[in-house]
Image (cartoon, rainbow, N blue to C red; front, side):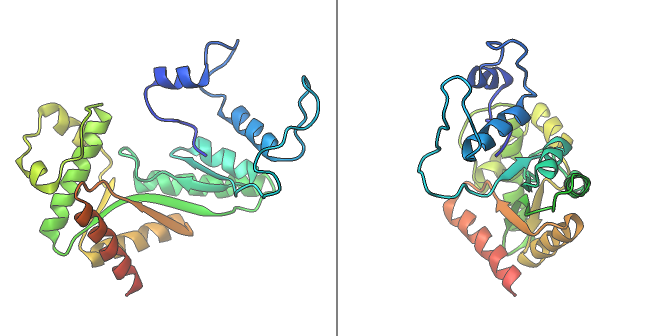
Length: 233
């Protein structure tokens, strides 16, 4: 579960109906989450209609609750609830220090609330290639994709060759320079393996989920394969 559905603040307000209810704000996430959990449990009682509505399909267990976020706010809610916590480390403005602080806060809040910290997962943007030069081309494509997304420039992902021919505008360069330096993990199989092991050690997470934005299907699959092979070796 994540707080933001994506899109602009105006789109979020339209989807959630903020402004239609007195006092409704963008900070109603904990209340929405609590309402969802009540619906998934057997303890929810509708004071207007009466009775207990049943989430369908009936007779099955609710899935484990994971909260996804990129801030201390979500980490705190997950800790208080004793929920699993996933940190969105693949975001363009997130760095490893923020991830470390979020998981430390999550565990501290859980212990203070008498909860046992549960599953922990970190999402990481990572690209991998046989040679450093190839890896740099893939990283440049990933960075440009992040830049264009942040600048709200629509369009398809560019492949390595298209990025190599791309002339960066002053605005794109400024946005790229503002990104966290370790937004994208890149390199040869050994370099990416070492980087992932280090970030897992530093954050203490149980699991890492890798995301990449490589346009070419074969290059994308090969990047995942090289990372998987390096971690098995």
